[in-house]
Length: 81
Image 1 (tube, rainbow, N blue to C red):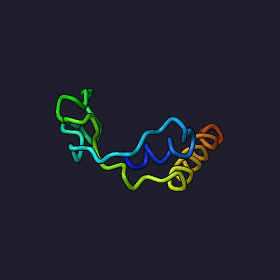
Image 2: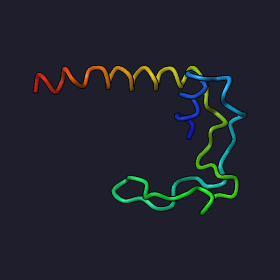
Image 3: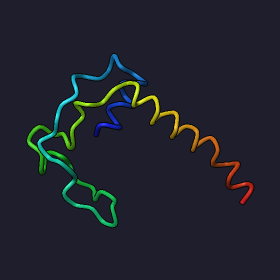
Image 4: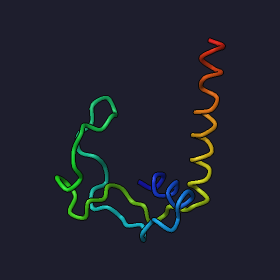
């Protein structure tokens, strides 16, 4: 949740409320590390999972730019494979 909130703080800070700590530390059901479809209110009273209180726009910028670089370079990597 910290990374996702950081990206939002970087991209659209005016649309982000005060980050909160979720009352669930992690998704409860996963298969091979992937989350099984589940609404957070099924296992979290405040609907949040993880802890976003340490999120920052600076951290979000790094994550966003890294993901963007990987996405932009993907077609070239496929073409050269």
